[in-house]
Image (cartoon, rainbow, N blue to C red):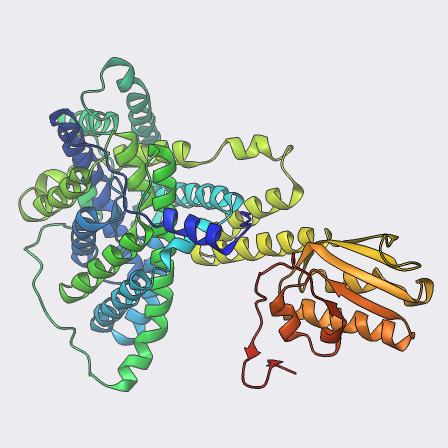
Length: 537
């Protein structure tokens, strides 16, 4: 985890993490690549949006409209060019209970409130703190998400049985589908070796689709999921009672959805930034995501956030500017309005092959090799975040990973507290303890165990020049040590503590010795300036 020597250093790094996006210049060549990349992304968005709509229990167009509106607005105003946003599975699994219990109109109202909360997160610049997520958590995030994307594709290997239920493919149909998936992956691998004028996934989808349509190969196609034709989304205020009871119903869902959406979006922003070598604006992304979801809720969409799979398709296809995301959204709308018949003929196997290549490119394979060389705690964080992402959801996984990392950091920092004794050069017969390491809640027990008053001379000096008193618990520990020496009838002196410590310490305050080189840091405690006492005393 990152360490900061001063508050100014901490603030400076957060400001750098929150700066505006570092964008590539738009040239004719780059614009052409971005448009073609956007087309590729749009083709991959269709089955994803439809599938996530089914998960949430809403009509396919609700998912498609969300993919179009959220994708367009975040592409124009988002914090990271190259990112793709739309309806996602992480949000859909939370929505299903709300839709089942209260109906789709409550979902639209929840999406609006979700967007408002995300806008507030952007206004208060909360997104910049995502930069403090440790690197092992990021590795676990991408590994878990790669596995989730892979598992999600397994649904495309199911067909409707005679009994009306989905069953796994078998026989010749399974082998043909696997062959088409393999052919797609080979084409994506080989195309860049021949030409980079057209994104490899687009070439693969086009050729495999042409083969299937030309030879009328009987494999599942996009149209088998659901019809995707429709009109333009229309504005409508969610048809729910405007009461406090309604607010209490949608608020818990809105809080969860806004948190999941922002965490996934900001982690994707960091990941895309690492790949492209460009920085993004986290608060700007919060504002864009929030604004997009507010609009989506009023236009009949299920809401959304950044999509790691489609973002990787875009980046790997050469998409670098905002044109790619805008093109993807507009192509998706064109599919809905004009080209649904053609898009419905695309074999799902081609899109599965594209997503399998995304899985291969997303998974942090180097993390497996690193397991033998990194600390056990970092390896544990990677594995735990990966597993929790797969079994639960991304938001819980990130929170768990950060908590584990913070506890490990606190444990390691606590072990640094030491007291090195030596004879005083200025006071005859006195013993000086040079305190080193941070004194905070995690190191207070060890700090108190360092001193045995019965074994010390009559005068003892604790020199804190190599330490720092961090919190309320640290002050309590100093008080406890002072009481031990007082009970033993020994004279204890405290040196090189800040003026802040002097004001906050009660019993031990009179033991402090002022000097010109006392530090000037502040202690993070609740201090009542009117009573001159710490909160809790």
